Image (tube, rainbow, N blue to C red; front, top):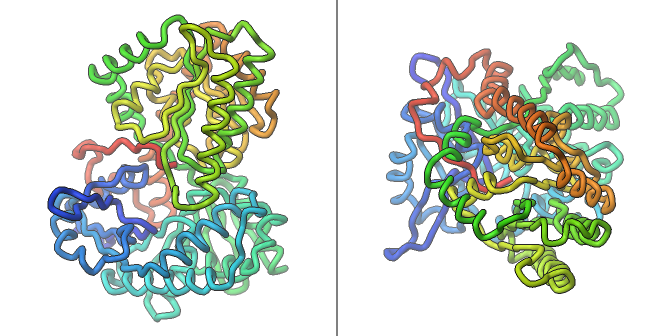
Length: 493
């Protein structure tokens, strides 16, 4: 970056764009998500670079679209071209049939096909080659997530001197889970090629260090606090915890807008004289949606005073619908919703309002403002930003957050939320009952505490902490964040 001697190069599986079919053919639209929100202020108009896959298999044909997209974003986009075979085995295969389920403690869903592994290495090398092409040895390469754990190793193998950092957005599993991976030692050694490795929680960092000790008896730890140094032979790697967050100010400000307030009032008019319980999730087997529906059914059965007085609004955002497991989950959710509504519906009251679609920005915020209770119960999650989004938008501070103890957000939010085990149907049912009957004073005290945590530790706090650990710089060395319009991340968690 100009005057700083350092330029940030972000590398992630996907570029911060979406490909859509417009009236004149393929078009590029801005992406949405926490990562875009965090990094855009650093990159915009200061020479930042973002490298990733476009989401299609014809990146060579996008050359004419990338230049205007880069101008609009204010930073340069460079696509990594991937063939259909590479997408199939690297992305749908190794990333989503091996690492995703394994790192979420669901090893029985893993498909350990050797060809997936070799394609994963091939694509990581391709990302490294593109990164070398568009970066210099003074740049800082910030690599994101489980798709690209081998990037630093290939950068060094090719002979490029780059300062590199890695952040894992999903959980890191305990040793008894991770050691089932046939390529466990290769993955761990590849991560040790980064100068800084970041995790969401202390639990994840502890699991990583425990796994290192399983493959090497000579692992030593130096230092204390959020960032420590792992010494493995002649390697010294900084390993830290950096819990990701949201732009609290942007959420709170937009939730207060007239458009959101009007929409929330309209939704409230359609659901009078009852408390709304809100669930918002991507379609994914890690999110615990079937277990949540079973808990809601149990609550209606065991606590009949809830009947007619609560409505569960469950939003499921379509994801990976071409994958058979996700198709099966979609079918199961429709079955459960139909069963519960068929059993309990009566005149003027339907227990579950099920929305299987993406929500636009204002509709999402309106539902956050509408809901007296949010129920966020993943079986395991790296963080789960929906929990933080709900708190930021709860302007009246009268909402109740029911949160899985296995969400990364639990480490920060456990004192204000009602904590539950998502595998415990009766325990979640009891939490719904507790939330329904909670008095206003307790609601306010809990939510005020939650909102203060999210406000003080927002997305810019996250970027600051990582950059300080990586470069001894923080956001004050980059463009002022208030100069730019921040994108509200929709459900991409």
